[in-house]
Image (tube, rainbow, N blue to C red):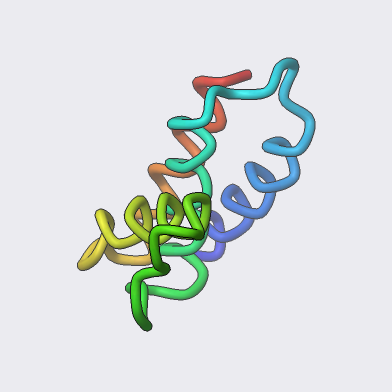
Length: 84
């Protein structure tokens, strides 16, 4: 568990130093996995039509509902590794 958390924190640091910016769908996946790993399932109401970015982020995070923090951390690590 401590190793996973350390690897996750390393991947978070590395995500800010990727050689090129990922496409928007990949960025949403990175965001959603990070939020699921650190905050758990999404809560609150879905943003309205005027907040397109907030709505997309909410939907991406909501798609991971029920995923454990450990599983989300591992998926995040794997995704960042694949982008290097």
